[in-house]
Length: 303
Image (tube, rainbow, N blue to C red; front, top):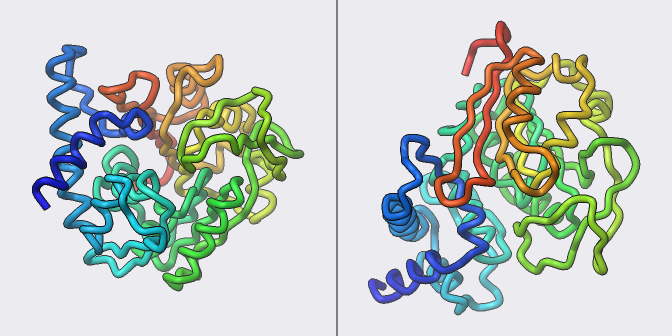
């Protein structure tokens, strides 16, 4: 097991796709490369033990990161939570770790309150929605995931855990209503897809605006809007009318700079001008990624 853990650490440190997904923020750190490298190594080292001790089937989890998992390994169970989560590989496992074990959306967002109305844009396999729904049975979570394979996994994870307070939608959210072209050329389900590009391999999916979402549900207030949509957050929020933004109490997202002409600093100014107090948490490994949380000034103060 020790030898396997050492090998796993080496893979984590050398895996560019995983480094791009790293979401830990240490805003007090300088850009000193030695300090950053040390923090990165420590993070991945502790991540190994969180994966091994936080999830069931630790041997199979380790083998998945080593590329040795059997083809029939499709599910993990969260220790102490009783949730069964279907996964496709190590990127999904990493996403589960970030949400459930690292609790990034709590540390860089808001602790959820039971009874909240929550919109999850970019739900993926459902890790954020599952966490929110299980811990807050009176809340309603509306999960939007455009990619068919991820949406199917989302539905499976909702059903097998009996979480009736999640409603899933196979729809994209964007700047305008209609359809959106999704890139399917990447094998990893969580790899970043660019926007406004031509792709040889892709599909068209129905798309709504944020205003459409409130009308479709229908919903008068959103207590928490969560976004993890690989750069689409700018188009979604910048094109939301004022009356839609006024219905939001809190926002938490992973921002992605360098994928469009916009930056998270523009997003901060945009939200502040519309009545939110905003905090950001940079990624000390990749400066183009980070977290943003916003709370409506004078709104609901719970959480």
